[in-house]
Image (cartoon, rainbow, N blue to C red; front, top):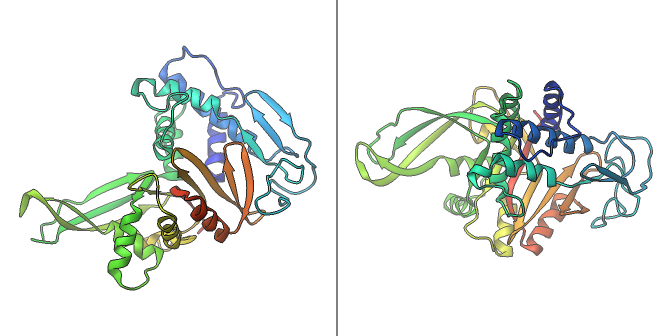
Amino acid sequence: LECFRGKLLELGQSCNQNPASPSTDDSQQPEDNSIALLNSLASVFTSLSGGKSGVEIVTGSKTESTGASSGGGGAWGSKASGAGGAWGSNGKGRNLFVVDPAQCRKTLSNVLAGFGRLQENEMADAQEALNDVFETLASSSVSKEPSSVVKSCFGLSFSETMQCKSCGYKMPDSNSSGYFHLVPPAKLQEVQKQAGVRLSPEELLRRCYAGETRPCPRCSAAKEVPFNVSCVLGSAPQVFNLVCVWANAAATSKEVEDVFHQLPVTMDLSKVFPGPQGPCMYRLRCMICFYGQHYILFSYKPLVKQWVLYDDTSVKAVGGWKEVAAMCKAGRFQPHVVFFEKYV
């Protein structure tokens, strides 16, 4: 996601730290760990900047070239030999990097040691891990910039109005913001079934967010009742993060297939959360999936017009969205965090 990478690199430079040399001092204080996290992320993004030719594998401070061919063009300037082939293993790809995340994990482990989250050699939920990264950067004392950088890239804000469907009681209006917006796939299925006709992805999401149950101060203080919810978009981030909340970690192929029918490749966010600024167009850019306790990531690379699979140190060209959907259905890979990048 270039918008976040670029702003984070600028931020690393603004605090007069060397982003390519993150600190490894285990004794640093929590506020210093925020700086270390910033620098370790900047180091990773510097490696991924495409400024060097050839395919390189970056492991800590050691950089090893695989001897891939160089030449003109930007990053991802050439295609793999074919869908499913490993990129960077045969010298036919360029500017593709596999980066060791150990330093980021070590730094996050230090930052969050008091909370017992994201410790080294432990599994972590992808959405929770990303939220910890965002919150750590936003609370950094490095500069006044981090919070605004994270919020402008990922933070969506909106005003919310709620009214009881039973008695008409209107709750006080509230303002909400967040980095992630959750939706259970089962809810998508339920709303689509109730509609009776095929809904657009925007309308499907809007209806999912348009109601909830809670106690009503006027007619049902002890029991939850249905409320209508109206959301008005305040600010649109550069990246909209949608989180699929699955009921279990072993979905069927049919359940995975259904979600792909409902996920938009492009969408107008103003049709999900209406706002005064007009159309807010987003396109699906990357997606974290899981199977059991294993995470993989699919990312669309515009310069080669293909989706690419990242599975640990394996990087493979997949093809179009149709091929991604087929691969996830066959492998029962459950979409978890889906990133939509703004383009209008």
